[in-house]
Length: 44
Image (cartoon, one colour):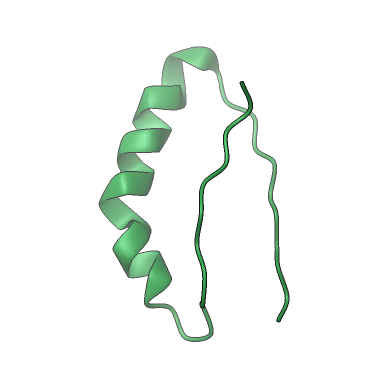
């Protein structure tokens, strides 16, 4: 299995927008062919 970790940077004022978009679309992403695992990590 291949694990891909992607580090993204956002303008702090847009983080909430990204999180909302991720929540709205994570089920669709999980159903892509070959996707076996999806998890969001966040720096603190």
